[in-house]
Image 1 (cartoon, rainbow over the protein chains, first blue to last red):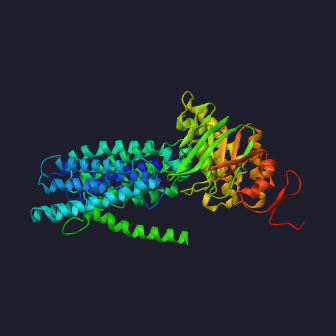
Image 2 (spheres, one colour):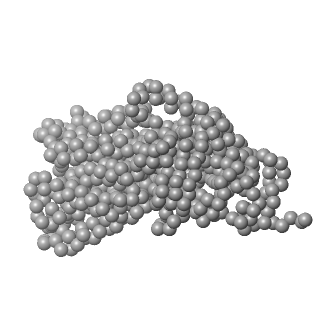
Image 3 (spheres, rainbow over the protein chains, first blue to last red):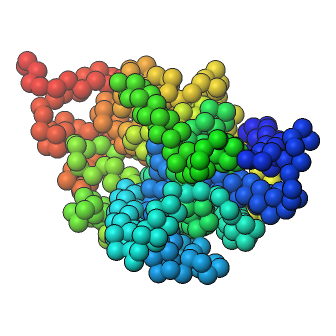
Length: 319
Length: 260
């Protein structure tokens, strides 16, 4: 596992500087000189690249923890309704026309994520049972989705509608250092929390009852998972909108290279998630299209066939 | 000593165990027998501190089992659930090593000593369950018998004082059933408390030192196997005419009316 993490870290260290060179205007020794190259690199591409790594790392790590917690390879961090909750919060900021005030949109998104977490804890938090918890998450996701649709349908003007719809697609275009300062500490804190749950997730490999017999306190574990996923996903949605499928795909790609314990999957999944989102965002940036392909859409285009292939494989295995 | 006094256990608002009082001693293989739905698994889970008592109490060494901190309780009681259900395709060695989870960061134990102890315990458990040759094999490629041995290896790796196992012999062929029963008896002989839910009355008769028969949540017999599983008890509880055949230690249960 250590070697895998080291390899991924090296790949990330190589990909980040390369991604800074790429864009509509290549900034490289072989390309034509670009005016304001330093500003473009330092104020646009570097924060965007770092943000891609942070958000990807959060999604990858959260996906690994989530699959471990639900004992299900098809689980995604979006399942608990925290991402739709955060998205609804952000949409409210856009709906109320407050999004241009600095920090208001991310703050609304974090409040939305917090609201979803609180609701989740209120409905399911007493028992520590995983099935009820998942159902509560699905209910919250559907409620937040409905409220978001309601906000779109009631939005005061076409600009707000278009702004909301575009924002929901998820992207890293025009993000600044300020966004990174919001997302990075929360994501790292969330990942640290999820990392701590590793041994308990390992015990859950044997089922809920066996895990409790191995000393796992089900209720406490549930709190830590909600907190960790909430921090990571809330922070990610707050600055980049909804970016799907990374949390589902990455742990799958990484798992065969580990001993398959959830705890040994969290760190490499975080690193691989960072790498995937960084590469995907760079490709979005250099594709010759009239307007830039949204990152959220690009990853979903990649993710949906992946999910289908996974389902078909599971079906074969179960047959 | 693992004790239950006036123990009651509820599931979905229904009492599944009632008025159970017993004192289990280490060094004995105790079998819990009873018909389907008698409350065997619920009783075992309550003894392990995994199900709350709806009445009465379970005590381990004089302490209420539910008041022992979870990780410490896990070091004292190793529990094997009925379904050996493994979510990820881990290797046998990894599966067995999960038994050491309750031992991580025990206060006052230096990290190095703890790593050595983990390694030794895992190696011992692998050898005891004859898993050495299977160490790297993914659990999805194990036969039923191998899976049962690996699951028991996981419990042994935790070096618990008590082993509570829910039907570990189910789904095993005769030779594996025999081997696992013998190894459970060895664990008891080594001074551990071993409590096993058994469906197979002949296995209980031949291997257990003590048998507790429960029916509809209550103890109906608690004695040495010959008495607890006497023909009268079996006919009363299981409602099947039967007769024990063979010698002590190798008895077989013949069911139905035998010709006079």
